[in-house]
Length: 246
Image (cartoon, rainbow, N blue to C red):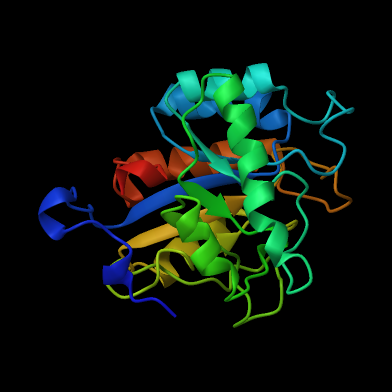
């Protein structure tokens, strides 16, 4: 495993990370992230990273998935566009040799729409593989967010981890919380309080609608709105980070 110091820029070139920083991340290029999440984030002046994939039924189902024009608009709004691979296949020893191709396919589409080459990555399915790390580095990936595995089985009860940038590998950033189907504001508060000593907390939203298009019931829209307002009221720093600003 690489040491964090081998991956990040010298200290004198980095901005100071504010205490209690929360990073909002949205996976899977779901349409409601544009129609619902985008206006809320803009209203409260928040940044976020949207991890884009052309997997699932992205290419044919424009009712449930973003268009590239919408993704370009998110970029123009100042949000970060991250790489979630072209086909959203979990990385395994059998297919890791195709990871560069999967990353480049998204980068090619980004270039086509005037979006910068991606420097952040989210592991498809949140599964990690050690053999993937040098490939990510070669492809120019600086930050890579995983889920809460292998420490825990995939779950939606907030069993994540805070990220310590001077200790933890930036290509193995854990999700502090994977927003689950029964989450309430109290659950959200407990999550933030549980990891209050962590320098950064990464929150993972896969969907932004009441019924998840992947077959999982997700957090209602009203809950996301309340959570974002709760953050905005000052529980955590108002300098919300997208990966390139960390």
